[in-house]
Amino acid sequence: MSEFNGKKRQRRSWAEPYKIKVVEPLKMATRAQREKAIAAAGFNTFLLKSEDVYIDLLTDSGTSAMSDRQWAGMMKGDEAYAGSDNFYQLEKTIRKYYGYKHVMPTHQGRGAENILSQITIKQGDYVPGNMYFTTTRLHQELAGGTFVDVIADEGHIPQSENPFKGNVDIAKLQQLIDEVGAEKIPYFCLHTTVNMAGGQPVSMANIRDTTAVCREHGIKIYLDATRAVENAYFIKMREAGYAKKSIAEILLEICSYTDGCTMSGKKDCMVNIGGFLALNDDALAEKARNMVVVYEGLHTYGGMAGRDMEAMAIGIEESVSYDHMRARIGQVVYLGEQLIEAGVPIVQPIGGHGVFVDAARFLPHIPQSQFPAQSLAAALYINSGVRAMERGAVSAGRDPATGENRQPKLELVRLTLPRRVYTQAHMDVTAEAIIDLWEKRDSICGLKFTFEPEYLRFFQSQFTPTCGASVLNDGENEGETYSDCESDILPEQHADAHD
Ligand code: F0G
Image 1 (cartoon, protein in one colour):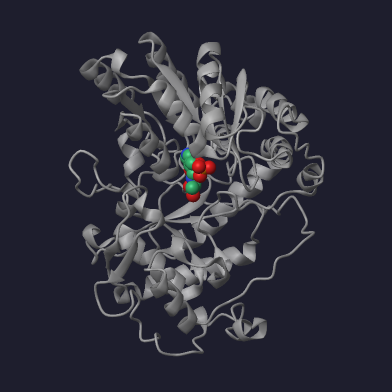
Image 2 (image 1 turned 90 degrees about the horizontal axis):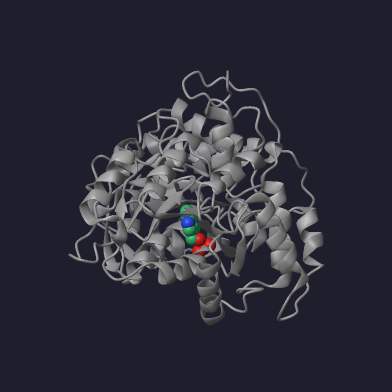
């Protein structure tokens, strides 16, 4: 029986497959300091200063700890403007593990999305995909396209225990092709794993079926490979016929069904910055290289320093290790299972890069128009210093055609785990903080906008509570010496000790 087999939840112990060589001390602000900090941040966790955060689960993007091998690789940075040795090393590594022919580094994932969108999408086109991602959809829209979500319905249902909730609904894809015509669909945008659905994987069988439909109609298929290695691990653990295959073999097979990929190297590849665009088609790659020099940098560095390309090449090799992935996803499961046991509603099965708390069920008294997930993320920070991210109505933004707020079915708070950064003890503290909040959930209220930017509003928008000065009115707002979750692990005096 698999240790991650949802229902029985039996697990064998695992330990992190590394030991810690360098440490970064953490600081813990007091409850009063946190109240002030989140109010100054307009109740948006993106606007908090990192120094005010205790355990930072905002994102797994660019937040990984690099290995000693990666740091050693940094010293081999060849910072030549053109033809850096590190580029050729990175190109060779991407060809080996992802299998694509042409590789163009970009400053991060959205740089690759911008270029792919501009060279493939025309005004009035449709881009189907298995759920939107914020930056990906925006670049598709800015290029004149309309994103169409064709993920299977289960992807939108937090309680559904389907092991491949990221799967494409082939009938929905076929329906779109019938309605608008294949010539209006420049490509299919395949996400692995599906971030906005809760880090949920796609099965190999479904990828094969999706590709077959695309090929039949002459539609290209591009992979958002940001967390494809995590998806490969889930296929190994859950899909018949893959248990004995290596993660690297499975990754290569996923990529073999696609025509290229955009990549945010800040996730699976375990670097702090960087990304790439990879394509198989020679003519399209030439177009892309032309755009890279306009928006990113010369095609042999594309916005990345030589040393960062070297670290990324090494990170890719490390990412396909079974031991790494088992501990990485095992840590997410470890946190998620504690919440499930306490009755906290989360997206199940537990996803690849984080635990997604279902804010709609956590705070049923807050209507979606008052942003329950945004409120919950702010309240969690106030309660514990743990920083999470809203993935609900604020992230979904407005419909560009109508200007109305989108109302996504999923209203989630993402507790995202940086790779190789925190220990199980940090997960225990995080779980305690959330369970404590769950027990006093009635004291959380909603939020309304005070500032709303035009693009990707979740990053910079600001809010005010719908009820008084704070989103968390549990009677603890006044005290300077509130002891979080009554845990010895979080002594408030730490803040003073570091001043
Ligand atoms: N695609 C996916 C699936 C992502 O999760 C991200 C970034 C991107 C593309 C864009 O890449 O940030 O390097 O430009 N996700 C981050 C997150 C921001 O926190 O989930 P980028």
